[in-house]
Image (cartoon, rainbow, N blue to C red):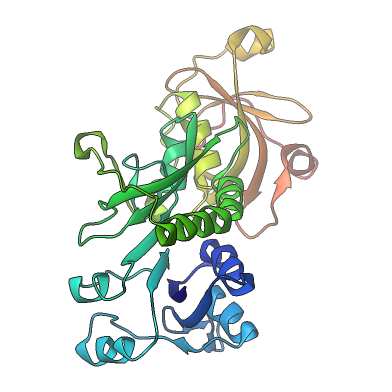
Length: 318
């Protein structure tokens, strides 16, 4: 197949790599988001997908609006049997969706219809899902509403973070996409409509989402710490500075020292400190902080942090 590839971030790179290395397919063009200025210098930086496309010698286009008529006319000139879309970041028009013989195939990071939207991997962890995966989908004009083609399921392990789950799913994307294209070409793949009533929306992540609300359940806070790792990160306030929490553990009362109950604790209060951890009262249960990062400092385990900072029981976070 002749393939136009549309994608932008790191997540899309393994799929493009798989297509570029495939003997069965030819990537005739890569469409990605415009270069962005980074850092104080304002230097323009390629998207991860553009970096790979340039390395592979594939023509690259970076339209501000892929739906503009001028660019649509350009697309029509590029040989194409199918458009593959992976985390592109722009909405395609009906004209583009119906342009190729095999339409537009999207690789989406959830088991559709669960978690439509922009942050499905993170919301799967935040919500306590036990499984997630990838779905290839025949795109339509809705947001992740098209008919499903193939799915690949993975377990969400207790230690999985947003970052680790991203890497797991990204590694599976190429194989699933190549299998989907093969079966589409052979004509033995039957698209399955989604059940809209079973769908949930994975809204965009914001920095404010990472602010820890200590009156929540300890298990929920722990999921937020994992799910929002690496961005935006879960954070609180400590001595008028921002304190990011990178690893934590829900603990039960029976393993806490007896003096942890000598104070009338409220959510956000430090109830116990040992050589390796800080334990905090939540709205329900206790959370032991194992890895953190104080504003202006590097990420470190709590044991290292406590060698340089003395924390008193009954101090407040948040």
